[in-house]
Length: 502
Image (cartoon, rainbow, N blue to C red; front, side):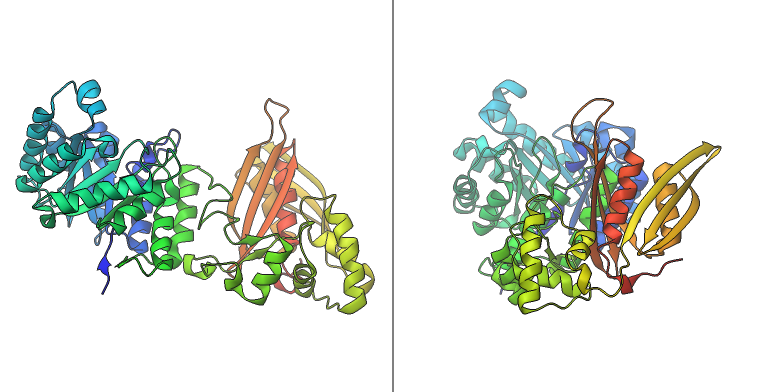
């Protein structure tokens, strides 16, 4: 029977330390509630003594959620611990997370201390924290570069002092998986009272090994993993929650299980990305927009025949409705036919071969093949066209922002006006009036391609309709026009029967 692996989420503490990603208290509460729904066991809500805002966030999160343990960080300093305890006064289940550096680097250069003094300070901090809460976690900062015998000694002593969890951080992301696994194994084998506490991992991603190190730690006996949504955090980030959870779900030989509701992973990822204004890289494992996208003809054919040929995870298991078959010059006939079928164009034999050859020529010259391109290729096989073409886009500000948009759908011209909070909002609302797509704009990213005031903006949009994703792309020096073009590009990928026009 598998053992429970405790999921300790530090998105709101370690993750929020990323420059430019700070959240206010209300935003933190939104994320905390999403983490509760996701099924995390412990939420590290903040470092209360660091600022009044952090203190207040821990207080309000403690009031807002019921199931997870709420954890507050402190240094091995009595004032830190007192303030952490005060911030946790409304927590249904509270934990103080205190600790000190244990590597020669930290002991000598940061703390200017001695190993014996560090042990005394660590023990004193745990004993002081036990005055306020029963659940005390001790972190041995920079354990990844510590001396093995010293690490075993301080862990033994803090457990004697009452630590219920001992956190073994690879603070600098230095370790290789075999090294980190060996550290956990050493503690299991050499600390006499290790059975009195849970061993926790806390790995950083400086060498890109945070997930591998965390899994190695679990394989050698750790039963709590400290993670963040999307792997956000200091420098190159922390261990990614979704990667660890899905690695364990895929590899049932690892004798642990989590209580994470995995179909909520993608939604939670997008929430954190949006609130922190920190885009998820497209090729990010599990939650990147390309994680379930296929452009190689060999892969596309395999996935269309049987998903597990090239996907070890069912997209629905993480909250993604379906895989994406992207048309490129490397796509095969199976992928082209898949997209043509979605347009209602059923081609076989010579007709399909003829269109495919024309498609390859076009795909060699274009990065993204859209509905307009496909309709051009199969024009003679279509009885009617419902392609949406963007015409003029104008907007003005006379108190309120007002936009006017003209579209051509098939052969029919349409015009609409709308007001909005800004020019982009007004333009998209005007398009909505014409097409009436009833879609959710789930992701809207604007990125600079070069630099300077005359920069070209690249816009990426992800629309959701009926739980299915549709992507739109465009680039232009005019951000408003690029946004309108990307929106129309995504709409053109929705089957005609899915929307109506005004």
